[in-house]
Amino acid sequence: MTESELIEYNELRKRYSEILLGILDETISNISLTRKGSKIAERKVIREFAYWDKFPISKVVGACVVYNQKKLHDRGLSENYLRGIIRNMNEYELKTLRLFTEEELQERINRLYYNIVHECIMCGGGGFIYKTDNSLIDNYSHRSLSGILSMKTYECECLKKFNKKRDELISFNRQWFDKLGEI
Image 1 (cartoon, rainbow, N blue to C red):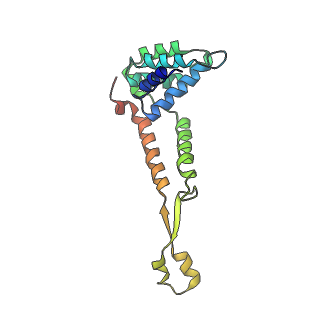
Image 2 (cartoon, rainbow, N blue to C red):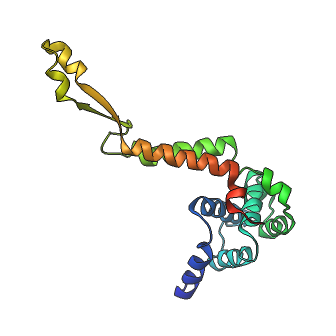
C-alpha cells in the first residue's frame, strides 16, 4: 500500500468508532473468505470503505451486521451482495437490529475482561486489592484476630474500568441506532 493509499484508508476509517470498526473489519475478513485464496487486495478494501462513505453510518453498519450474522460469506456472497443490503436497508430494520448476538456479546465481554482485568499487575487479575488497615489492629489485642480483622478489600481500578466498558458495550448493543442518530 502506498503512502497516499494509507492516508486515504485512515481518513475513510475515521468516521467510525472503535466498536464499529471491529464490525467492519470482521466484514472485510468475511468478504475475503469468498475468494479462492481467502485474500482481498488492499486497494479493494479502500474502495469498499470509499463506497461505504456514500451512505449513513447506520446503514453501513446495519448491513455489515446482517452480512456477518447470517454468514452470507459462507454462501459465496461477496461485497456486491453487501452493497445491495446497504442500499436496501430501511429504518425499521435498523432500529430493531442488534449489533451482536448474545453469544457474540458475551464473547466480547469475556475478551474485554481478559484484556483489562486479567492482565492487571496491581490486583494480579483478581479485580480486588487486599490491604491491611492498621487502625483496626490497635482495637484488638488478640493477635490471631487482628490479622483477619485488619484486612480490607478494595475494588481495583481495572475492575471499575471493565465494568464501565462492559456497561457501555451492552448499552451500545441495545441502542446503537439511536446513538448514531442518523439514517
